[in-house]
Length: 245
Figure 1 (cartoon, rainbow, N blue to C red):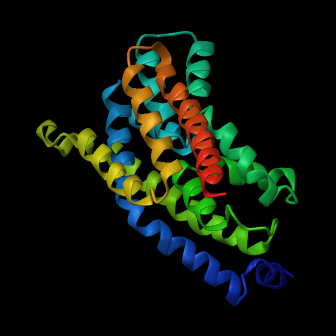
Figure 2: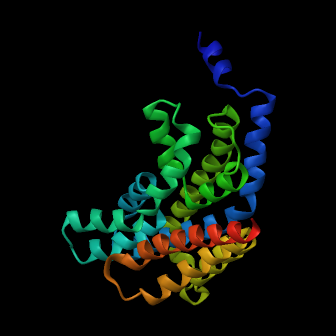
Figure 3: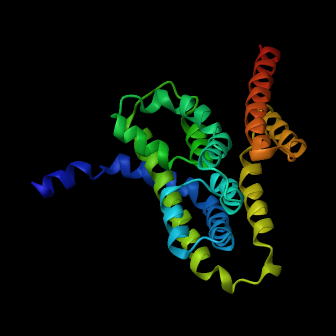
């Protein structure tokens, strides 16, 4: 019986191909993911968390921006509701991601959708929508296996790199400026993905808003950048299609 259940879960050849394709699409981004996770692991320990507490946070809070937002609040002994509120503000963009992904996965059970949403990242959303966003088909099993091929290696890379930062970060000289290296790695991955004018306008608007709104508390500038980038992208796309018509 156990063997039959395992065989039922094992993907057939077309689904394995979808998983493999997703992994190959994700592979160039794992350097940035690993670097960012390593830097976040170092930041967790430097804030004053014990190794065990930092490891628990890494395994349960799969959100680097939320972790880095919460750390100074934890260090300043801010109330728990404020820490949660700040994390929600930083990750408010996932409401937009969820709305866009919902047509592809709404046929799944509540628990499976919950697990997919927990493991979904910005890069997973970009890669999935870049491949299937314009597809008329919804709810295909290939969509599920492609998404799994993106989110599972991404999660494993993040967790392993973050744990390395927690336990080995003290060996890295501060002069290496890993924070800046992580940002450069992310830019090297994101910029080649910008292939249309609406995407370029979305990126420029989000970057400008994030830069201008840096002084805002609780990283509200990041939330405003997400909203502003989406609005700029939608308006630009409508203008572009109108001109094309």
